[in-house]
Image (cartoon, rainbow, N blue to C red; front, top):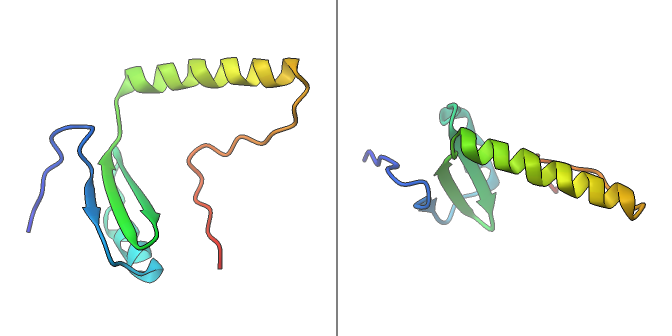
Length: 86
């Protein structure tokens, strides 16, 4: 079965997967512009937004950095890093 992502706000959701199955899917679906997320056995496949989204994201990140520096809050930005707990 082939399914095409046509709208950015409509992800494909696949339930009932194991972490091992997610990692296998991650290797198979290694494409620019596609993001995979996995939580509680559900795989979400979503197209990444374009350049405008990236620009706005950077502006918001910069403002947040400046605010946290101003209030002297220590933090570590992680971006879209995968957090894997065994």
